[in-house]
Image (tube, rainbow, N blue to C red):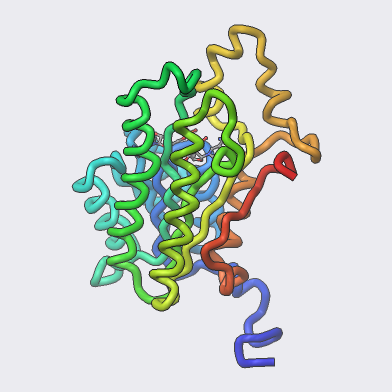
Length: 263
Ligand SMILES: NC(=O)c1ccc[n+]([C@@H]2O[C@H](COP(=O)([O-])OP(=O)(O)OC[C@H]3O[C@@H](n4cnc5c(N)ncnc54)[C@H](O)[C@@H]3O)[C@@H](O)[C@H]2O)c1
């Protein structure tokens, strides 16, 4: 057994994020909020970056810092990284963990009707802004940091009427693998999570129209072999695993967390 092996570090130390600065984009609600809560519980200094000013009170309740931030705005992203660095009290404003979670998923409708403007907006938020947020974070990350990108099961099976979203999330998987190769030599691990259908405010808002036409959203959320409603904390647990030392040799991976719906 080498010096990092069994017994060298107790199990609880392997999921301890004490002393680490984490930035969670889109942490004001849904999956990002659950991730922020788990990271605070694990001892990290967490900053939530969110477009919604109401997320400030969510952050305060969790014991996290807050940065009002639209990830498509480079100045906002830079300011959020400043807040995250300062929250940790470090002199050089470094951050250790980025959870690149903020994203949008308006239903495309038929690809025959999707406008170029619609497709461009989807790619701008879900790909271009996620890319540049990771780039700027990586510049401030010490060796051994960690980036987690929020993809989707839509990346691995393009659903009807969500073509632009599927394409954007497939791009997230591709850039995750590319970043993992590039940043790996610095000890920075880059992974992605593909959530299944998770019960979040975003999902409920997006399906409001379908709900009016009789869709049973609760059935959709629990339509997996486990017959268990997808909960934001299911994704937060996976994110905690990826951020922790338990995942010290996991890099460039897409972790599907969907109750087996794509099995
Ligand atoms: N909920 C699901 O079923 C599901 C499934 C697969 C993937 N995902 C992905 O998980 C992520 C979070 O989804 P959710 O369901 O929790 O969403 P949500 O809509 O419930 O919450 C998203 C949060 O991100 C913030 N946000 C949106 N655009 C932003 C921007 N430009 N800059 C900063 N903050 C912004 C919102 O204000 C909100 O607080 C997204 O990337 C989404 O694509 C969700």
